[in-house]
Length: 106
Image (cartoon, rainbow, N blue to C red):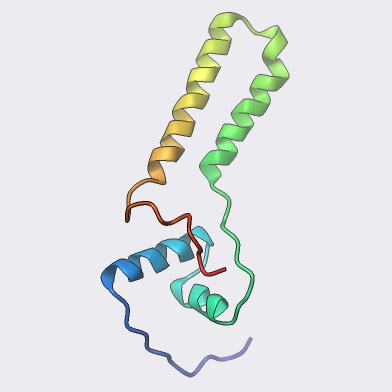
């Protein structure tokens, strides 16, 4: 691995720093690695949300067992899926007023 020995100082506002940190986190990168990749025009992608994988697993189970379960079990499973989806939705809120779905540097 190359040894990085040079620094580049960049001034940003507090809100810009928060957004950059959030974008880096979504990609599973440190802020330095994120900025290097963006600055060198490297391809970036968001890290998949683990909570959404949990919801996907619940939906897969529901689909597999759909015809063998009773209405009460179906209702309980659908309510669990709904609650997990709402939790994921609300955990992505906050921060600056939307805008995080805009260009993340790629």
